[in-house]
Amino acid sequence: ELKQLIDKGVWRYLDPVEVIRRVQAGEIILPSTLFLKDKYDAFNVFEKLKARLVACGNFAKDDHTLDIESPTASLTILLMTLEIAARERLYKRAADVGGAYLYGESKAHHMMKLQPRVTAILVARLPDLQKYVGKDGTICVELLKTLYGLKEAGRIWYELISSVLLKDGFEQSSIDKCLFYKQDSHGERVIVVLYVDDLLILSKLDQSGVDVVDMLKATFDEVSEKEGDLLSFLGLEII
Image (cartoon, rainbow, N blue to C red; front, side, top):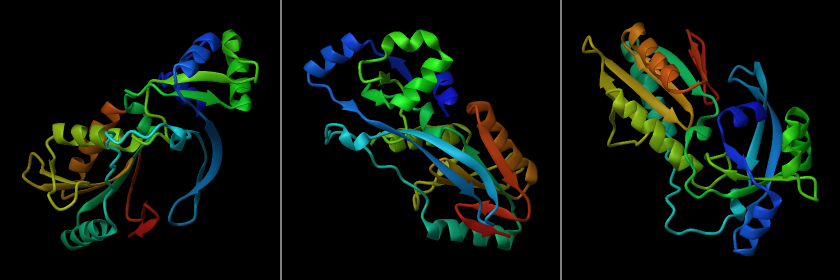
């Protein structure tokens, strides 16, 4: 998790003197937390141990001008598209964009404090970071990307992934903001249901679904894919 955050340039390190100056000017330092979670699919098969560093965005100052709406596909739309897929015998595949929120640019540039144990791991890996360690054994950073936990992170990611799909020729449904569709080069329909960083891709031709996944892989660094007769998506067993 920390390697991914470093590689994606999620933050810049702040000198303790700069931190004091910004706090005196009225800025808030957001706490952060690191948690671990076992991840299982809909068939209760263990997939991985997931680590995630999260900003405690609830400590940020209220900004009533901030758009934090983050649409997700409704269960009704998901079931309707699965019914269409079954009736029309569409190919099904699921894609997951790893570290999705980290692709968004943060305009707020929040300050955030890394926990002592996270700071210790970073310093052990990168000894030059010792100069940023404060008296309490922590490092403060300025967020350049929309880390998980920020109020605006979901909205910024939604706008980004929507723009990627629209640029690829998809149209957005007027019924649900997370339902996208287009016709492939053979005139056949391709449907995408979006739920945060998970995408369900339905297509008449298998290659059309492959093309969508390839487009995602060309756009984002880490995209995992599932396909086949037994598919797990959002905790549902799709057969």
